Length: 500
Image (cartoon, rainbow, N blue to C red; front, side):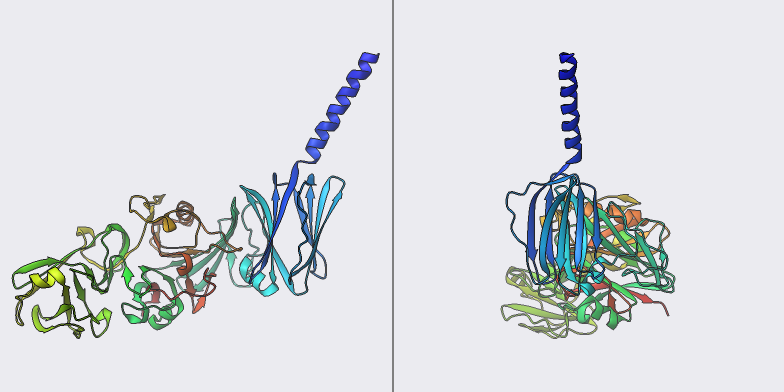
């Protein structure tokens, strides 16, 4: 009998231990707080993510988080108080940890979770900012996708839009032949917000447009789109702070940028046929029987180099007195200047320095000039080329070429705001952006970005300039939230212009 009682006691103790292990499945280990210019963030570090409920009082000032099976194991219990948050209190009750956040009036919140590391964080911001940051159709599932309600817009307002077949996709026909997707979902790292434009090529021309109509130049995407009469636009090429285009670039059959790298590019033939592949530039100039390689087009002239300037660069070369400028019209040298030569409307200026200038020392006015440019046979009839990269999608499959194309780590690695251009399987133009580095969107890696584009039907796509440059404009309005806090002035943009 005694042995039976002892065994029963052991089993009972084991049952209690098992129940306690089950009841307290998570520990709250740390609470961190940051107050920024746009929002306050409270981060709850947990040993694992428990079941939880969130509720907001009728006056919208008390946010309650009820964590099931959670113990408060914080070693430091520092008070949290700011201009937005009055207080945070913690109460253990029946195996639950109740966190109560008292907010100042006129504020709203946005809640997110991460799986690795395990975190739950709350952003508190002015109610108007919260509406913009979430950009979320009515009805959301914290564990996965956003589920738009019929007739609910990105901020929950009634619109003429509709829910898409992809969970989390909200569709709006913004113009005839032009469809906008707003896609919001959560992954292991947080919330992701993306916007995509599909355009019917029979109704829209896709044009590459220079900032302020020249190189170098910088202008916002909304400004570029307005000048071009575009309905929608995204930022395009990589560019230098001066506005020089970085990458092999052609507009209306005229070269306006080059690079030494072989990189992925998007292009168009004169009939609008899209092209995707790698492109390189090999140029040369022959004057007075002497041939020299081209070092660049429409960019600052370097030492011992040859640069070609056309009217996309402006009216003058703006070169210094340490070289020589040859004005070329109709295949012949028409003028020779030491520096800052005028660029003819119907010609170019060949500007040289150092050893290249020495090689052309015997060239005189009237000498014949031959300019050769080779982009590879695939690109020879391309009137538009946007050399950017890396490649994201090829023949409907994820194909990221960042390592092969020697992109630096700030582009190749990590989650960031991204921009892309592509073509869908049914031949529609695709312009896409995803926000990053913000509470409403953590950004995407290149591989995840490619997967998202494939999900939306991309047959082929390349990456464009991203980070603070990422910008989508539709009907004159910025659709995303540029990570600089405002539109960045960029070097050029891809613009969808209605056909006449």
